Length: 466
Image 1: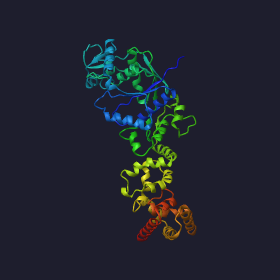
Image 2: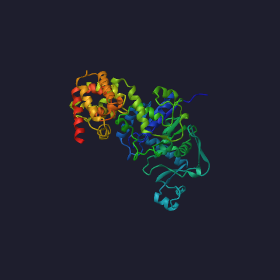
Image 3: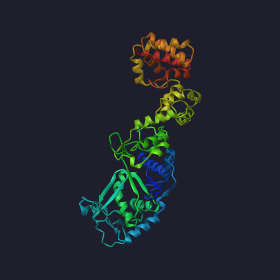
Image 4: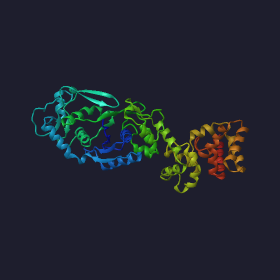
């Protein structure tokens, strides 16, 4: 049997930024096409000019490129294919599969008392203008063969006569979708579960237009938030560009999106793109909702950050360090950042966190986390002795990480404390926070005089509050 050459597509409507659900759909289509050695097509469904804007189309393409999702054909734009839709609509009307209707929504609701959809009022009125409705069969059923969900059956009695062309002659989604997939010879349609209900309507249109070889469908699971509610543009952070601006790496974002409904055979979480392509099978996608877990995304992003060469990490961090930093721009020293970059890289979950991990190096005074101060210094009975001891030890010791570690460990021993406990007030005095890059490397880069100055100021503040 001759193997079908796979043709899959991603067809977003440019009504906003590319959201994570759309990006996941694009990725799964791309992975499927690349795994099968087929063609991946980008099609822009911009039939509604009131909602579509060129800058949004550009944004979708820019975000796809950022994610590493390229396309072999397109972008095709439905707004440029109006003649094909008008021709199909005419054929459907001439064959009796569609008819004009002049009913308003209020008319329909008044006749049906709001209990059902359109009631077929205009089927046999012979109108020559209005909206064009498809004449749905009264009997029988349409079966959608879904690669993820199995066969899904729709009773024709539940499908109303639906609009396929607006009163202004422009095609609605259902008609344009059917015609485009036929003309572009799509073999597989991989899209969100929310579109499953429209699939029998598309298949009915295709059949009425003479199609005998419909595509295989795969409806991806919904993506839900922590409350198991479908992700919403109004309620949740869903725009991929927002995650880019928050310092997520494209490789990490792509990796995480792939795990929303699919996983490799051994359930590992870090999956290089080459392995994804080799292992991806659309039949392995699970139909149950996928939870969009930002903490898990941050953890995966942290793994990718740690895997970067240090020089690459420095380069990728610069936009966050040089654009609206929390310190005067003239205070930033690239050499200083490069010195601590390997340690910052081990702790950052996103690139946007980098400035807060190093701001103490470029500010005259550190930004003090009051909760950390209160816990490690304000309410610590040993804080004053530790600050005094650090001042004495750091004043004359050799200024390198090994010696700073040694004298601090000795200070901890003298106070009957473990090193981690003894470090806490020193860290807060120096950096303003209880977490950050390793203390002794930070002290080494900050320098002796600035370190001593901050210890004295911390001790003065503690004394004045006693």
